[in-house]
Amino acid sequence: MNAKKELQVSAIENGTVIDHIPAEYLFQVINILGLDTCGNSVTFGNNLGSDKLGKKAIIKVADIFFEDDEINKISLIAPHAKLNIIKNYQVVEKKIVESPDKVVGIAKCMNPKCITNVEEVTTRFKVIEKTPITLKCHYCEKITDHKHIEII
Amino acid sequence: MDNKSLVSIDDYTKEEILEVLARAAEFEKNPNCNLLEGKVVASLFFEPSTRTRLSFETAISRMGGKIVGFTDSSSSSVTKGETLKDTTKMVSNYCDLVVMRHPIEGSARYASEVSDVPVINAGDGANQHPTQTMLDLYSIYKTQGTLENLNIFMVGDLKYGRTVHSLLMAMSHFNPTFHFIAPKELEIPLAYKIFMDNNNINYHEHTEFNDIINDADILYMTRVQRERFADPLEYEKVKNVYILKNDMLENTRENLRILHPLPRVNEIAVDVDANPKAYYFQQALNGVYARQAIIAKALDL
Image (cartoon, rainbow over all chains, first blue to last red; front, top):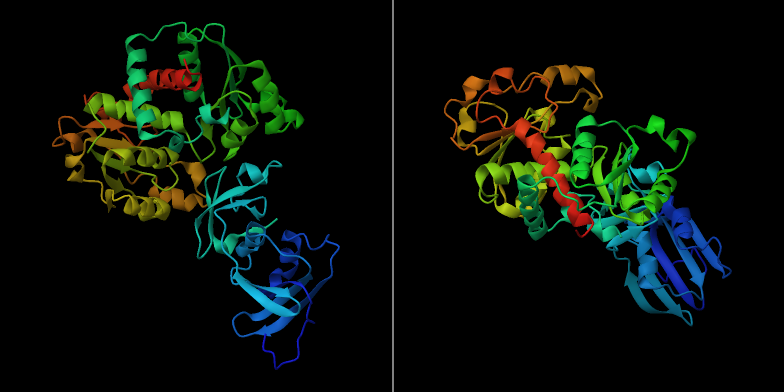
C-alpha cells in the first residue's frame, strides 16, 4: 500500500496482512483460513482498486502469524497474494504464497464421475503444475486445471 | 493394507511387472494349485462384466479359493442405498481379498483405503483396468519373447480407450516406439503426448490405416464405443473408419501379433481370425494366468 494514500483498511499493531486477494475470492480465503470462526480481530476490505487485479481484497488479522503450509492453501485461488507480517505497526517480514505439493480437502474434482463427487470422500490432489496451478486427482486420476478449480 | 492393492498400473514398478509376468508363465505351466486353499475372495461387480468376472473366478477356482460376491449391483445392498465405503468395510471383514468392478472413477482407490484386505481393481469406470494391462503385457511378452524395443501400433479409439492409456504407461518402461492410428476426434490425449515427450518415448500419429502397419510387432486394435459419445452423429462418423481385413496383413512382419481387449464388434473382420497372426482369443486366456499371478502377489503367496 502506498503510505501517502489514506489506508483503506486501518492498520494493525501486530499480526498478518494478506494483500492482493482477487476480490471474488475474499470470503473463500476467509473460510479456508478459518477466520470466520476465529476470535481475533479481523478487518477486511473488498473491491479495492488494484493495478494488477483490477479489484482486490485485503485482510488484516490481529495477533495471528500463519504457518507456511496453512497459508499456502490459499494459493489455489489467490496465487498472487502477498503477506506482510506486522509487529508494532511495522512490516517486519514479507512473504509470497507458494503452491503446495498436495491439496487435501479444499478443492473439488472437476470429473463428475469421480467417487469424491458421488460419496463423502475427502478430496486429495497432487499438484502436477504450479503455474498455472494444475491438480491431478488421487482417486480418479483426472486433471483439474486452474480454470476449473472450485473450492469446497 | 493399501500397499498390497493393485488399483492402477502405476502401482507396479518395472521390476514388479516383470516379476508378475514370470509368475504368470509359471501358472500357465501349472494352472491348478492350492495356494488359495482356505481363503475367501470377494468378487464385487457393481456393474456387469462377464469376461473379466469369469476370468477372475476361473483364476481363483484354479488356485483352490472360495468366492463370495455379486455380479451386478441390483443384487447387492447398493439398491438399498448403502455407500461404497460401508459395503467395502463390511465385505473386507469377511474375506482375504477383494476383487472389485465399479462404474465410478476412483472407487477402487477409495475402496483400497477403507478395506482391511488388499483390493484388486477390475475396472473403475473409464479410469483404470490394470489386470487387463497385465494380460496385454503378458501376451506381448509371450509372443515377442521380450518387452524391450518393440514397435507398437494402436488403432481406433485412442481418446477414451483406457486399455490403450494403461498399456502406453506400462510399456513406457521398455523403450517402445508407438504408432497411433486414429481419426482426429479420437486421437491420443495431450496428457499422454506430454508424458511421452518428457520420457523420451518415440511416437508417431497417423490418420490413415494402411501399409504402415508392415513395421509393426504388435497391432493393438480397439473398439469405438457408442456410449463414449455425447453426440450420436459423431459416433456414426467414426465407427467404421478403421477396420482390419486379412489382406492388409500380407506384407506384415512374421512376428506380428494382433491384440484386442475384446469384445470386438466389426473392427476386425472375421476373415482375420484364421490368420496365425490373430492372437486375441489366446490373449483372453492369458488373462487367467496374469490374474493368478496378480492375486498371488497381492496375498504374498
